[in-house]
Amino acid sequence: MQLVQNKEQNNEPPNKAVKGWFESIGNRGGIPTIREQFVRELENYECISATTKEYKQAKHYDLQHYVDVPLIDKNRVKVKRDLKVVVQLCKDNEGGEIKCGNYLNSGTTKYGQNITIKIKEQTVYLPSNNDVRKTVIEAGYKNKKFIEVIHLLYLGWPENDVPFSPSSFCQFNKYIRDLAESRKCTVFCHCSAGVGRSGTFAGVQLAIQTLIKLNREVQIATIFLWLRDQRACSVQTDLQYLFIHRAVYRRSNKLWITWKEIIKSQRLHS
Image (cartoon, rainbow, N blue to C red; front, side, top):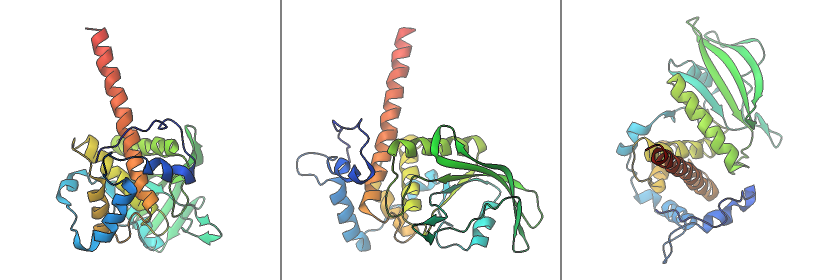
């Protein structure tokens, strides 16, 4: 699917107005909009088999443990040898309802008899992004060597919705990717139910990796079906599905601008 450049693309639409932005994107000449494609994919989902082979190379984020996992298991996942970044997309309490247990208690906390969590660096806001809280912890399992884990809490994403600020999310996303690459680790992502925000987040990662690392055309619909095969109800709303397109669009647009600057620089020095 080709994303047509919108005249108002530089204007940041408010959270609830993103729908109109997305509905104006799509090919001309009778080809359905992204929203219509999402509805069609849902209607045909039962009789469509997602193609997963091409995405196996791109799997960098842990998609297996982010739904309805007891607190003890969440902490057990954290001490996996290559898991050094945890992304939390929900607040502990939203609308008066508990969405996630607070596993970042001050000092040292034991869960069961085998798991120990220590706070190494107290929680701070990222200077570059006030929507993100960063905490550095150490996680140990069965008294083995402790692993340093960076915990990132993203505050700008309401339940059953999309991030308040696309630019803030894209900046946050880049920060996570840079962390994962520098630490050569897996990123663990969770929210409350583990399907809406987490599924959308995972969809963005897979789409960007397909675009950049595998250097091939991005089929968001195929990624959406693959996510649904892995986790029922992943990407809960049409707005979240549309947001994947926008995040990929913004990322690819920045890459194109960077590439043009490189070419211009080479010409000036040739």
